[in-house]
Structure formats: structure tokens, C-alpha cells
Length: 322
Image 1 (tube, rainbow, N blue to C red):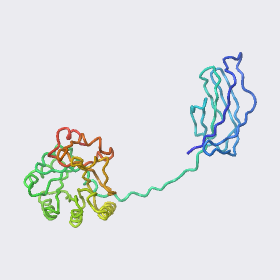
Image 2: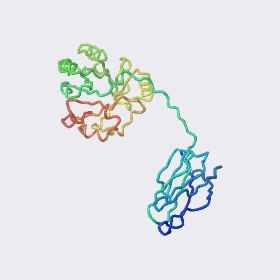
Image 3: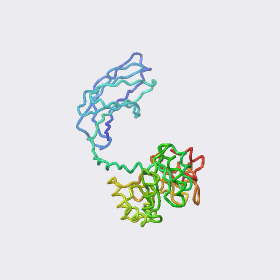
Image 4: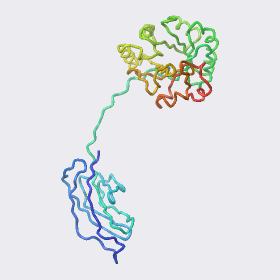
């Protein structure tokens, strides 16, 4: 915050009406008052006319020890300022022949206020594995339209076994990281582990759409989870937050507006620091596509979003993929 103390000097007659240029004579002394605290400062400043022509007027003043700078006004409108507290003069241009009021204000900078920002928590190696993940089911090859930076997750569900096995090598050959995902509470954590090993997955993703699924995922040793923290208990959200801050877990937050949830911009993860938002695209009660989600997603979250489901995305969604 700065304090501006105005010093006013008014010229009584327009110079255009004078036969010859005339300097306002004498020394005019003003007390400096604070526009913030409305009290008198200990400094007085003398300003005087140091030069005047038909086109300009130059004011000068004695050095002001307490000044950090000066602001310059004409008719109460600030024209410019300087943070050079050693300044002792200023030249104003005259806009016309009418009388005008010229002002010089002392700028005094308040003592700086400091805030200490704690060091960020150690970066998790798992967080990037929970960003830009595109989930698949019956046709994982549909996800190959995604840029190489996208991780492609194939399902460990036995219903999609053949399709996932057939696509796995192509996914990796095209430069994508390959994840295997599944609901461990339905098909078993060991099925996810075994299938991941069989297709050469780079990592595994477990599910937590309910409180018991979260417990099962943690018991299975999950490092990446997709789910909804709002379906978990407060104690589970605190546990997830602790694991994330310790670099042991990354969370993908399902924001399924297509199934009646709020838009991502209005969604809350209950205090859990998630790595990405995951909208449901092209399926559900209202099969929104990515162009529907984009204006309703926080700008900072959009570049890292994950997507469910590749098979139901239309051309407009593929064109909008970040």
C-alpha cells in the first residue's frame, strides 16, 4: 500500500491572456497530509514555479527525505508518477489556455509485509500416471486416435479379455503407456495383477466408486485409483489425502455430468488433491461430448483431464482432446 500526499498549486490566469510570460513568484509552502491515515506527516514540502512558457510549466521543490517517489496531477487527474524519491522537479504540458490546477503528491511506501509459503509436498511419481488417461472397454483400438502423450487403459474385465490382449502391443508400439484397470471388488485384485503382467502393462489402476472399493483398492496395494472421493467416508478421504501428499497414491476423479453429477467446474473432491478430472463422454443419461465439457471445466484442469470412454467419443470430441 502507498500513501499519496497531494500538494496543490493553482495558476490564476491563463498565459494566453498575458502579454509576456510571467513566473508566479514567491515560495509557497504546504503541509503534507496522508490520504490514507488522514493525519499530518512530519514532513513539509515547498513547491514553486521554476519555469513557465505558453506551452508548459515546471515545478520544483526541496528534497524530501521521507519520499519514496512522487505522483503528478493536473486538475486532480494523475498524469504520471515516479518511484525516484530524489526527484525535485516536474514539467507539465499545458493542454489549453484555461487555468488549471497542478499537483504533486509524495509517495511513501508502507513497510513490506511478508508471507511464508511452505515448501510443496514431494512430487509423486504416480501423479503423471493419473493424468491424460483414456479408458477403454470392448474396442481399445478406438483410443489410438489420442496423441501419444495419452495413457491408454485397457480393461481387465474377462468380458473384454480378447479385445484388450489384441490391442495391447499396438498401443505400446504407438508410444502410449499401457495401463490395465478394473474393479478389484468385482473381478479380484489378482485378476488385475495377472492380466497386467500378461499384456505387458506399464502400471495398474484400481477403482474406488464406493467406500468398500476404496478399502479393497488400498488393501490391493493401489498406487493409482479412479473413483469418486464423495462416495468415500471422511476418514477415507483423509487417508487418501495423506497417501497422496506422501507420494504414495494418485487419484483420478470421476466427474460424470452425463450421469447427473455437477459439471467439473462445480465439482468438489471433498478435499482430496486429485491428479485429474475424468468426465464421462458419449454415454449415460445425457451423453455429453468433450465440446460440452470444455467450457464447464476449470481451465487449469483441462490440459490434464482423463476420459471415460474412448469407444463412445465422437469426432467432435476427438478434435477437442487436449
